Length: 219
Length: 219
DNA sequence: ACGTGTGAACCGATTCACAGCA
DNA sequence: TGCTGTGAATCGGTTCACACGT
Image 1 (cartoon, each protein chain N blue to C red):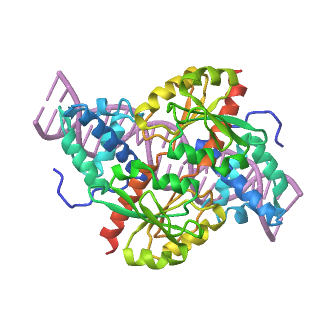
Image 2: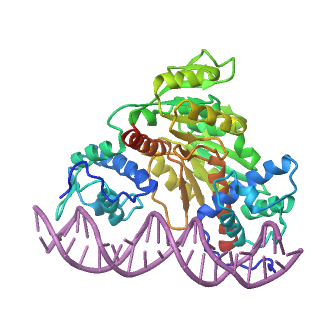
Image 3: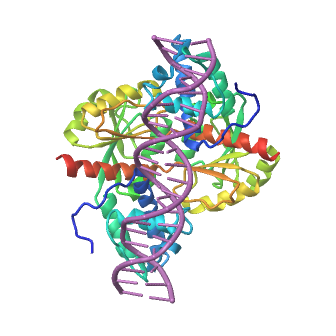
């Protein structure tokens, strides 16, 4: 029923995409455990996701299951990799090699998903020129030129908050289209640029809020 | 009009709380810049938040502005600190002192919000007993006992994904109520436990998805 | 009979629009 | 008049419920 290459009703949200990523991770794990075919019920029961959510998420991209049977994991994994685009390598750049930036350089989770930090930038003379985790740390002054030349479209910012906007501006000028921002500041970018924020302090603050409520309600 | 201590219609979401955290950060910055009174329009114009969203978010907790005038920043900051509970120090624990855990230990963003990592745990003999960023790294075997004794309610997990669930189980037994999970695995916990996930690989994957679309649509 | 795929119903969060107050 | 505070309208995402294919 699904015609290839057609565009389905594409009113899915970015949450759908994040869930697909979780489905992929889980499917791979199940495959490793020797499972071949699985129902949406079984696949989602450990994921805090309802089976109909899973089916709906997939339905935006095609029909990958067999009615009355379930999903072939090998097929499902291939389809998810294809949808997410992780079947080819993606180069990204990292700006700001402080504590967090250093940790990101060494994060194995990325290579597993075919994500490779191709360039790392900092403004600190003591860091520039050094090689960390196999990545040469380059001068932020050369960033725009280097990114333009490389054609890379994805960047992570792990600088202090007060320079994050400035960095984002340069990244956009250099042709970056997607930014994962770890700096606790709200970035202003043109409409066609996608920013995703990972704000650890704010996550913790919201946990604190609920921890506080817990005390009020239960002690 | 707002009676103290009463519970308003509390149908706000956790997104509301995260935004309050952003408002607080921004309000402090504005205060430092010498601003005293500000309208919801001006306050939100750099935050990707609509002014009515800001006002609605606050309305769950009281009336902090003056009609026709705006918000007194000093008052607003105090109220936000009070709502979020960051006017007192919060101790938390950190489990898993690998690259990311090490970065979290040194993250200045936390101390700014009165968040202090009181205990750090790892299972690696080479790390146990060492002091890192002023925090003594303790044996994970003693974790349950130590947390119970301390009464701490909030934990961060930065272990490899395959042990994260096991760690979460121990944390729950030890009395932890809120978990910030950096491990790329979905944790199963009792209903009264709050888990917040920071999944960097999945964030990046979703950016890749959109980067890919960008190519299809625009090149 | 079984489990998928999906339009329809539902629900919660955002946005609108305006009453209320300085 | 200007800006807040908030019910009402709207919008979007989740869940329901069932038709469909095997």
